[in-house]
Length: 213
Ligand code: DC
Image 1: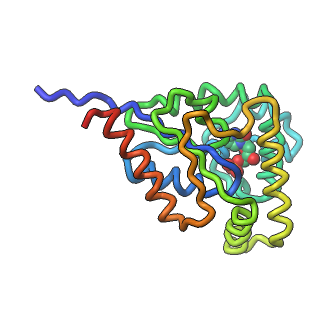
Image 2: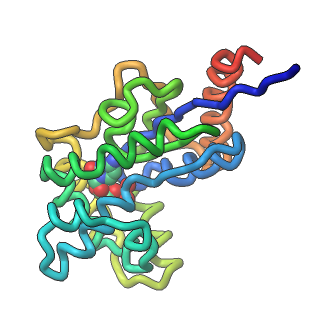
C-alpha cells in the first residue's frame, strides 16, 4: 500500500522593505503549492490600530484574521508605524505562536518577513535573504505607490526606506539580518521573474532532498 506522508517543509524569506520578497514568497508558494504568510501584515494590522490610539500590545494580543485585509495596510504611514510597533518585544512575543503554527502546518509553508530565518523558523529547510540597494528598492516602491494613485515623491520614499532599514536592523529584539545559513539573493539587477526563478531553483534542490524524491 502506498502511504503518502504529510509534507512538512518551511521556506523562510527575509529582507528589507521593497526588496521583492513578497512577490518571490507568493510565487514560490504558488509554484510548490505551499501556504503563504506575509508576516509584515501582522505588524501593519497592529500599526493601523496604534494610529487610532489603541495600545499596540493589546492590539497584538487581540489580533484577528479580518484585521489583515484592510486596504489601508499598504500606505506608507502604516508601514512606518509597523516598523515602530515591531520594536516592542511584547508585540513580537504575541505574534510568535501564530507564526510558528503557520510554519509547521502540513502541506508546506512560505513565510516572509524580517526574522523568519533567525527567530520564527530557525529550522526552516530553506532560508533566503532577499536584498537590493536602497535606491532600487525605493524606485520600485515609488512606482508601486504611483500605480495605486498614492501621492508621494521618490525622495520621500527613499528617506522612508532608509529610515525603516535602520530601525528594523538596529532594534534589540529580532533585528533584520540574514540567518547564518541563508542563501543571499540580491535582486538589484534582476527582474521579478528572474528573482523568482532563482528562488525556485534554490528551493527545488532542497525540496527534492528533503522529500527524498
Ligand atoms: O514587510 P513589510 O514592509 O510589510 O513590514 C512592515 C514592518 O513590519 C517592517 O518595517 C518591520 C515589521 N516586521 C517585522 O519586524 N518582522 C516581520 N517578520 C515582518 C515585518
